[in-house]
Structure formats: C-alpha cells, structure tokens
Image (tube, rainbow, N blue to C red; front, top):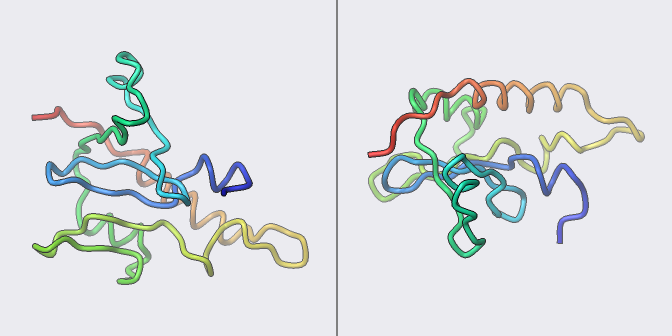
Length: 125
C-alpha cells in the first residue's frame, strides 16, 4: 500500500495502448488522471484507465523521459515504446540524504513533467 502523497498522486510512468493513446500511473500502476470526457461521464473505476492521445509525443521525447535508459522503457511486440518510467528506486525524488530531499532528483523529475505538460491533446479517431 502506498503511504505518501508523492507515490499516490504523482506520475511514476506512462503507458500506451494500441491506438497510441496514453495514461499516467502511480507507483501501484493505478491511473492518476482524468480528462474532460471522463469527468463529464462519471466513469467508474472499472472503466479506467482513460487514455488520451497527444500530439508530438515522439520516441525521442519518450527516451528523454526515461533518461535514455533501456530499463525504463518497455516495448511492444512490434518494437514500439508502450511504457515509460519517469524514475526508478535510485532516482526517486523522495530519496533523502541525511533527512533532506535531493533537489537534483526533484529538478530532474520536474523537467520530465514540464516536457509532458507541454503536450497538446489531439483529436481521437
């Protein structure tokens, strides 16, 4: 069971479906975001995750989010990136040194969130 705000509410990674739509998940791989469509229709948890299609989400951006670390990406049978992790145990921004948060890890994590935040939603087909 997750025990803090970071692990519950902030992205651990993102996952793609076969329609090139994505969702963000927390440390327990539970979806953490809703788009407007989901908010309007009161989607039940059983209907999750709600995927969103983004413009310009390229392999280059996905690899940057994964720090070009092949252990932080998963590819489907066709070799296409289908899952990306923003951090791992060693780069978790919650890691502390002598009781202090590691600001370098936080800055790196926020840079990834900034990159994702700039993505525009494209129309679903």
